[in-house]
Amino acid sequence: MPYQAEYIWIDGTKPSPIMRSKTRIVADGKEPDIWGFDGSSTNQAPGANSDCVLQPVYTVPDPLRGRDNILVMCEVQLTDFTPHPTNTRAASVAAAEKYADQNPMFGIEQEYTFMQAGRPLGWPENGYPAPQGPYYCGVGGEKMVGRDIIERHTQACLDAGLAIEGTNAEVMMAQWEFQIGVLNAPMIGDQMWIARWLLHRIAEDYDVTVSFDAKPMKGDWNGAGAHTNFSTKATMDGYDAIVVACEALGKNAEAHVLAYGAGIEDRLTGAHETASFKEFSWGASDRGASVRIPWAVEKAKKGWLEDRRPNANMDPYLVTGMIIDTCCSALAEAGF
Image (tube, rainbow, N blue to C red; front, top):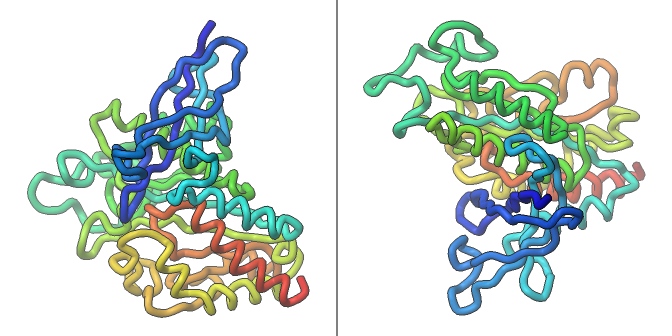
């Protein structure tokens, strides 16, 4: 019996790419192979030469359609099968392969905001909800809007076999988070994009949109990030390697901030549990630092670091590739 394969890819929209997908009917017993699309409609090609290639790179069971249907994460290629200029996955693969002996691993904490009718879900049409305070990891009453969506999303991620680690309500009303990891690159990016697609798709059923904007509401409201946890074999063995990695991130801070998502200057202000985008700092248990060392890591003198700068709208392929290049090259130079 034929099955449905949902081909998912990342487009060329700037400053933040968006997700696209379309359905292919595949004959029973056949694997999904390359497909194409109109790049002139996705900011990836001119109309006079619009063909782009979808190259399947990762598949999971489709938890929404069920049966034998699948979700197919694709990377975009040119018609000569080289990476498209918008294909950031290729660079992540190259970095991971170059430093495979160091075993770089990631966990990403994805924040997002539910929106409806142009404002965060549950917010009054005029004015604001109660100030931040009761929403973070809260429970009960009208203040915890969107929980039915996150419950469906969590189960969908589990049914798809994604490495979802947990969920929680965040600091601003209508803001939530899920975590994916611990995975290597590019798998962490593959799974994060599929989890994002599932969230968008499920929210459709509730007439709700999902915003990954870095600062969806101006003023005294928290922004939305994608805190990126990183480790290597060396950091899991000792603290000195963590220090080397943190110092390397500091030396390359400007380049990282520029690649960590649109609107970062609105979010990284030095307030609302962030460091300023103009400065770099790292420290144990410090949520106001650019890079935080969890207390358990500080106590054990080994483990991982948390880069708190990436925005919710960051590209996980781009971010993980950059972190690998920056940290692993420094670790190799230091003899780890």
